[in-house]
Length: 204
Image (tube, rainbow, N blue to C red; front, side):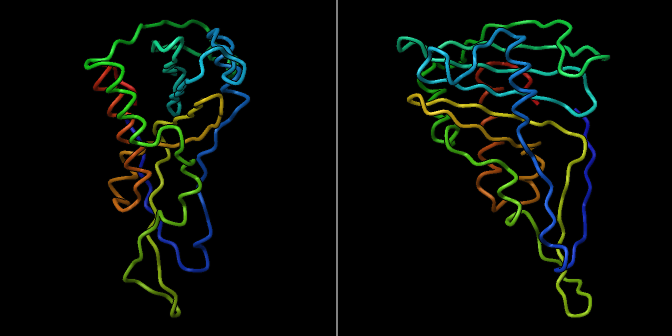
């Protein structure tokens, strides 16, 4: 996967500027409907994890779907291809049954420890995602801020005990390397690493 990395230099007067990673619920629901995945709020599983991966400037996307039914877990990876002429319209898709390398109990325990059900959206972490610079102007301190402009965007929908919530994040392994003190970025990245390791898939 290729990406563009932009390092911005901001002074105090601009430090409220933010770059957003917002879940587009309309497009996500449109994609899930075409993949025949029922809306989480009205689906049967009491526990469910859906992670949509989209790459900038790409017509391909993926949806990872984990669900618990009658105390049994199952997983499916959907790889879909968007019609170049119609946004959010799937031309075709493929499915793969997911079987963990270890076992479901270990996978779910690891995901829970990484707070997969309660993480915030990356947009809320903006105040922590900056580094103070030694350079100043007119007595104002400068800040270095990193922005990835062509990478991997993730939209997450989770349901636990019938409580549904969603959040979004973007190329977390890159941001985590620049902001190592932000725990949530490490958790995002570790979640993707866990899914790739356990299910033997590429998911970035």
